Picture 1 (spheres, one colour):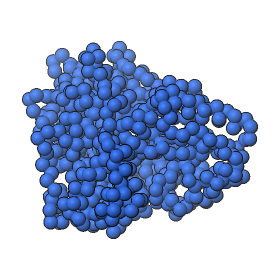
Picture 2: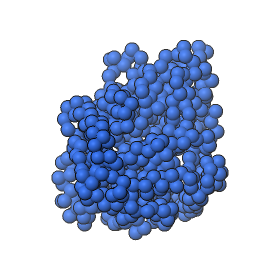
Picture 3: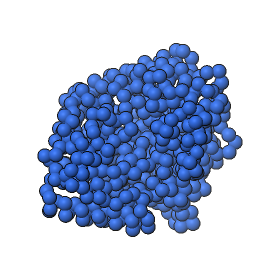
Length: 587
């Protein structure tokens, strides 16, 4: 590549995340002006908080110890859903809230990222089960209509056994008498988080990944005055002053709040959920499938070139940075999937696996005398003056959690600075409908077919013009990756020039997501990706080789860990893969 796009930060806020904007953000966080709010944690909750606070006109900084979304928020079932199962607990308020948020994401906030997804609910009994299931799904539809004041997804439809098998030929006919088709939605979880961070940056938030809070200093009165942030890329520590610090670190909540040496805070336990991906052709079906199991629920979710099957729910007491599936976990998913499918899936069909950790809130707070705002799914608590923490919840309701967290941190000031995120589209949502109308013209100009354009619009929305600018500047970027033709070379470049990728593992894990969609976790694409990314990030040949070697070691360790039988053994195996950018010890 002869030309390197200008990565300099513009003089006005921009949604572009680059290595340069990161350095500038850290420098600005450390200036004498200080911050109104420092958000610790770059998952969906922290990113949502940064956006909420920035759009209230506050001076906001957000730091993440790893890459954006690297924890739970890139390891989910990738669903935006109301929580149909909660209706059986009569938790109507929670379901209504989730369905309202699902509607906002589908129609206003991120219609390019969030896609309506049909599911089949197989029925095993002809009368009783169909009746109570129909009532449950009917209430689901009704709550969606009431909370959004319009239909955002199609309503339920009842299918006979023959109709169910026509929609899902690989369903076991001997295990069903019919089905109910209903709708939820799916999303690339990591892309949602990165888009939230970019949108926050558009409104002035200062954003830095690979920047870890290592101390929460307090003044003489015991008030937290900000944080000491370690730039893990350079090893340098930076003092950041902030009127309020919000801890949104999920399963790391207790470790981070303990840095303040305060008695208050949240109690969080950790649960592991795993997923597997199998090739699209191994399961014949045009919808997803939803099943209730003896422990929780099982989703079989279609994506363009693979299926996602999950999830599990088991206690986790190992390394928080690297949760990994075990062979037993994979067996559990395969057994439950094969119980309803004729596909006869085996370990050989598994493309890849991943595990995420859920922060499970425990009743109350560490210090019952301190204030807290508690909902069914999440809690915001005062850890110490100047420091609050939020945990719990789910991806679908990130916006509500963010609003609650900022309201809580601001206290009485929140009344004069109300949240506006319900009407603030994310990057790529503005003008998305119009951009869709131009898809044919764009495809014709660049030689991309309808499938390619659908792929690009579902990832970038109206921000596709930024990607097109890269292609216009360097025409070779219009070509597909030789090793992964589903993606363009431009998408690798865009990950660096606009989405804040600092390393090859950032690209493969959270942007061009070969780590979760390819048998080799994208190792075969490393040379090609490095050739694109290296000039943009200023790497020499030795640095590029270091990046590739680190990714190969981590990928091999992930694969080896998934062959172990226990969490402890799997964790030990994964640790042998090391970390390209190790985190500092916490707590």
